[in-house]
Image (cartoon, rainbow, N blue to C red; front, side, top):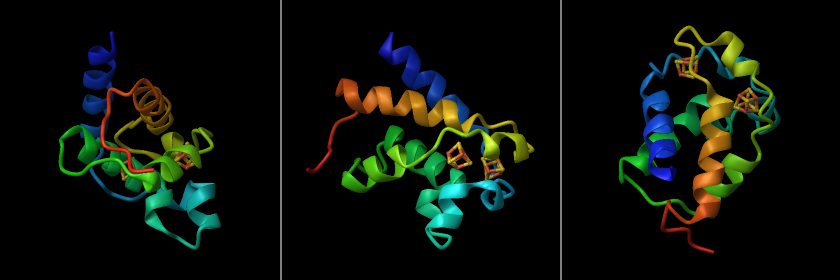
Length: 105
Ligand code: SF4
Ligand code: SF4
């Protein structure tokens, strides 16, 4: 079941073409003076990088994931139809379940 979640989330991240059209619509990106780690493109690339084993999740991963408002404003603006709030919501579940290792508290 969780492996299915990982596959589904990963496949959703692959849809991102990194165009950045979503960013101006993201309230948390604007609130953090355009710190891209707190925007949809950054969040998607963080999830993708972790699932590919490129890097391990840290406390900053939690901050990035749990500051997303799941508002869907990015989805409306995305030409590739990336469901960012789905990615974030499911990735939170994966983090909580311990399937994704390497958090440094
Ligand atoms: S989430 Fe969509 S709009 Fe944002 S960078 Fe990726 S493809 Fe572009
Ligand atoms: S769902 Fe999250 S990433 Fe997308 S616009 Fe809302 S706060 Fe930003």
